Length: 509
Image 1 (cartoon, rainbow, N blue to C red):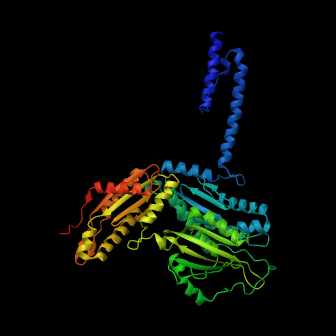
Image 2 (image 1 turned 180 degrees about the vertical axis):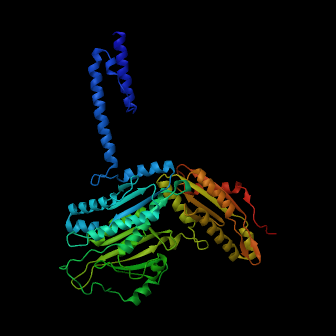
Image 3 (image 1 turned 135 degrees about the vertical axis):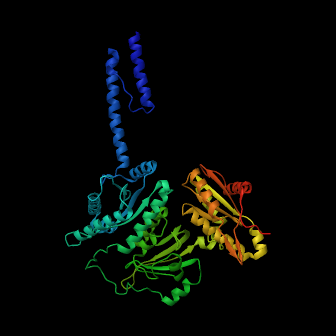
């Protein structure tokens, strides 16, 4: 083997090694190879070029929605990740097509696809050059704008929607085209999280849908049931049942009209618009946690269309305070007759209110905290903790009574909520100890919040004529992954609090 052939062979081997290690820009100088190796080199280059094209096509398909040619959910995640790295603020709009299921059921999926493309075309025609639109689900879109403000984007989408409704309200279009939307302004450098962004825009979109969704014309030949709008339940009896338990909420839903009847307690605790709201399924879904909503929607659709007659799920629902309550939801479908409507009757049990809310502070109690840590352990999610202990509560109780001690703890909880600004979940752990749990903040952000808590948590409480400033201790813990039992983590927080310096308050002689 001559030296020229050996060097050429080494060049080919090096080229293959670089390709195997993921160097897509690896090059091979075929002209410099000896004659015996040039054919092999040319074939390797052709194969590499073909593989590169296929790889690019696969990557493109992984991030592109085939129907609309827009980015898909993966494309949105990649785009938002880039925006988060730059740290520049931006506005996102969550957009949901109205009545797509009605269109598919009544006119077929081909017409449903035309409906989607019509909405897509109307949105893209009004977009700025630096904006991007993504289709993240069957009827869901997200528009991302790095320059347009929240109010300006809302106004623009409102105009697009109004034009669509006007253009399709005649007899020529199969149905009226419209969509619902919610906008949220995001600033990564200000501490906003992607979870907050999603929940804020999603919640606004569902509230908009409840208030503005266009009703489609009813078929003139559809059978009409004159008593379908009546409920087979005496209002006084229903109210008596609904008031019998603070944690249970009975409901009745007329599946033919969308009207429902809810308990007085449910109206109060979940901030429902009335005891007899319309669009009841959408109204309820608007309050379901975004991470649970798709599963709940799927099951309720099965009940509404008659596939299932029994429904049971446990999921999170937003209450009147804006917090999410864990609820057990059980219901039965009652099929209608010529004279009776299709009904869905059930009961909702508020587990959070029943078992896991501290009565003094209104925060989650130790059971809720253990459940939250256990949930993070199951999904191997990183977590940050801030533990706060209010010292001298025993002395306050002994000198001024337990009501005074409870007032100090309640005021401390209120200050803790202000300091956390909704970025974490708050709990009263044991006695005078609180724990704030964060799953999307890094160590520096958590330490910054802890410093802010040290400055502001000990706000004065008036006890008789004494303006009392509670002394506190603050400790932090950050885990790249929750891989321990909750009790072990709580014990470590307790030990850190014991070693933490006290932020002095009022001395009780």
